[in-house]
Length: 93
Picture 1 (cartoon, rainbow, N blue to C red):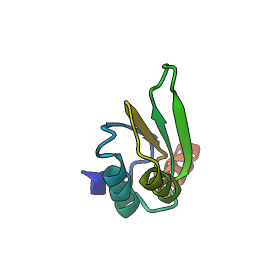
Picture 2 (cartoon, helix red, strand yellow):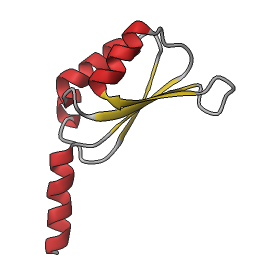
Picture 3 (spheres, helix red, strand yellow):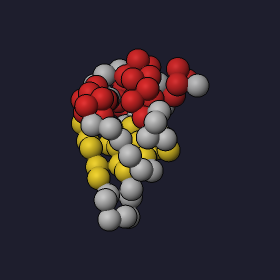
């Protein structure tokens, strides 16, 4: 599934357990590349809301050192090359 999403041009949203977050981020690095931008949010709209933004590699490294807790939402940017290709095709129409 991740292999097919690697070329997805749209922003992707994933809900993940804090217990699987680091493994999931490492898989995203493997399939999407370490430089793909992302945001990991926890406890959205709650008192302890927190956001981490950066590349997949940076965010993964941060959570390896800081144990994640709470409800997790991961937002990953779409494939930059595919977005450019879609944009170019829209301009041609």
